[in-house]
Image 1 (cartoon, rainbow, N blue to C red):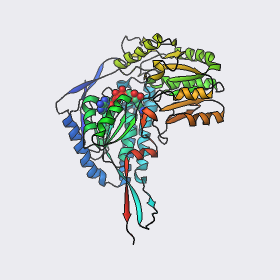
Image 2 (image 1 turned 30 degrees about the vertical axis):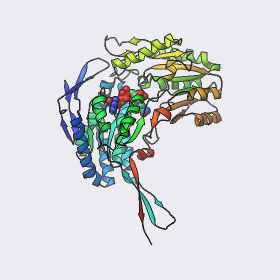
Image 3 (image 1 turned 90 degrees about the vertical axis):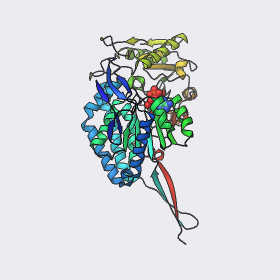
Image 4 (image 1 turned 135 degrees about the vertical axis):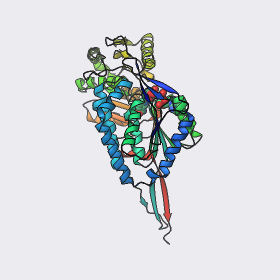
Length: 480
Ligand code: NAD
């Protein structure tokens, strides 16, 4: 049994009370590791180490040197990509092809992108009426705590760690208790490439014990959080006590709108990728399919046929496209929504049940599509975070927009049409931080990502990320 400690101040150590938590492989139900469950004392130690590094070697290091070290970290991650991808699949259940060819390469690329920015974070000179020299400096915030969920464990961590470090902050990373292994691997790589001790600390533990202690800690300057909307609300309340900077990337119920004039084969692929990539455990999943009434029957029939062909498989098999749901409790939660949908009168056209891959073990589920969903039904309103698609129809452009925006969330949206005017018009009307036109679920480190409404605030990736990891100092110099 692998035992994993905490990374604090460049060293591995047990939790101060010796407590551990099991990590379960959702494809086999086996305990694959025991990791430390960090206490308040451990959080204190991590904050002290991060503060010392911020005021010491990291804070004093020339920006270009910081960037060079981050680039080196990206290179080391790329060298270890096979092993890190395997860990990601083992603790999360996602297909190895997603870990090896999408998520971990994107994490390395994110690090490189921000490494390149480290010495390009500039201020302005500002003409003022008194003729004084006024300029701004973009300064780091200090100690950043990055708290991340279990669906894209390393990538979502990197979206925070990379810009935070590039801007000169130091970081305490807390992965989700279900998926701590790749964050810990990153902690080791940081030691290997010579990041000064305390620059990147990785502490594992539950949200209620370790996460809460980080949010309460007066020595933490910023919380960068991705996770559930209700957790985000609690973090906002707790962070108010110490006026911390916060950014929140929260849940979603994203509409994927298919107009009758779309390339329907492409839209069909987009609808399935939109919901079944990552087992639907994707915050931006296109979980509400809005279909033009004119093509509804034909489109749903094809979608159901396509969905029925998708079969769950061993996540470590390179041919597998649908892995295991991340945990038993998540599987139960998703199946609970299937029951609710049936009770509320939605029509099940594909899937809807637990399945297995011939081993009798693992948390596998059939990809599922419900048709005849009305906007009031629970599966049209609540985030399921699993492979369940709710298809809702609409009459015209205005109704499509109204239904798309009829949600407390606002993370992403898709629009499928050949009419360029309609595409831009609808994109402008959608209340979402990200709109995909004739595509879905594509990302690039250079393009910002983040939510409107209760999907949160702050933007990850891109140059806009620095707005969340720096503060502006204005300097007046009297020239008279
Ligand atoms: P979660 O909110 O339960 O947990 C996320 C992280 O917060 C974990 O590390 C957890 O340990 C920690 N945490 C829990 N309670 C805490 C507390 N009181 N104080 C501090 N930390 C605490 O979410 P989850 O179930 O792990 O992830 C699924 C959710 O994440 C979904 O709602 C999904 O939409 C959302 N998500 C959003 C995005 C995005 O970018 N908007 C991306 C991925 C996932």
